[in-house]
Each structure stands twice: as C-alpha cells, then as structure tokens.
Length: 64
Figure 1 (cartoon, helix red, strand yellow):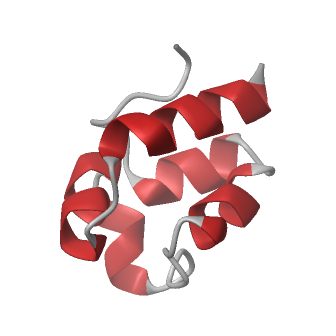
Figure 2 (tube, helix red, strand yellow; figure 1 turned 135 degrees about the vertical axis):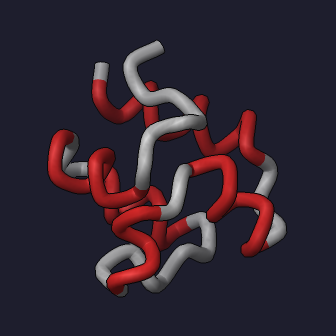
C-alpha cells in the first residue's frame, strides 16, 4: 500500500497527480484548501464521514 492514512492530503495530492479526482469522487471537494494541506487522510475521512478503508483501497488502486 503506497498511500497511508497518516499521510496528509497535501502530500498525497503532490505525490500522486491522479488522487484529486478520487478524493473529490468520495466527497472531498476541498482538496486544494489550506487546511486540507496539513490534514491527514484519516482526519479528512472522519470529518467528511467517508469510509477510510474504501478510500484507501481506491487511491492505492489508482496509483499502482
């Protein structure tokens, strides 16, 4: 698994250019906002009520 729940949204978006599309599909429309840059994937999933395991699976499938 390349993307981990402890990575920040900013780190994921900078490292994996295909990730914003997936994040937005899951309901994270604010991937570019300043607070998202320091928020971990786990924190963002909790705030948005998103199943973290499903999100991680889709993100990692896209970056393989």
